[in-house]
Image (cartoon, rainbow, N blue to C red; front, side, top):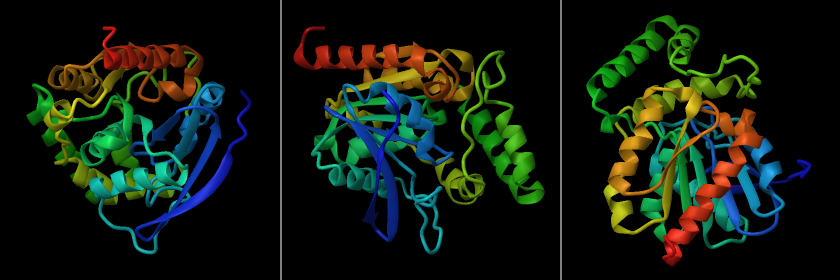
Length: 275
């Protein structure tokens, strides 16, 4: 379907959250990660809006959703922002698709508002503390913070970006870049919090939340592609290897959508006891 969304704003906790939506049917809420902007989901919204109501948004302090004074990342507040968007859409529950730290915020939402979750799909949420090499990753993150403080954004982005495998693969289109202020907000206000943040996956399992996790085939052994494996062990949930890199849903949408639909079908069958 052609991408022709309706744009709107919902005010929540001193922030005008800019969101846009398209389609008919059950609601899917697409949650951005560290790059903060919802535009990365425009292709998949167009592809799915013939069967779902699709909505995404710019996260707080990112792109169009600005505040008077930027503050440190507050994951429970991010969950309340997601709730505000869903409520503004006129729905009581939603399918959630969160990528990267958006997957972490989806987990947080499911923890705080379990009754509002239809199904949850987390794509490469970077819960690095679950990995066998968590200590090395933690110290690398500390190194990145030091690089940011001493050498600035460009050097930090270069070192971090070197771990984002698959983006330079032959024939793969470039992703839509975030607004220039987004990376600075990420490193100033989000990365230091994400360094020690881990949603309670055991509570989600206890709540019997319908969850599936995904890792991108182009990401190979990147830490954020290995974390879904550990999440699936804890949650006892489906794990899919899907097309693309860390933003494969954006640039390999045609290949990605069938796997997303397959995951939703599997989760629905599990819920009603077919599998």
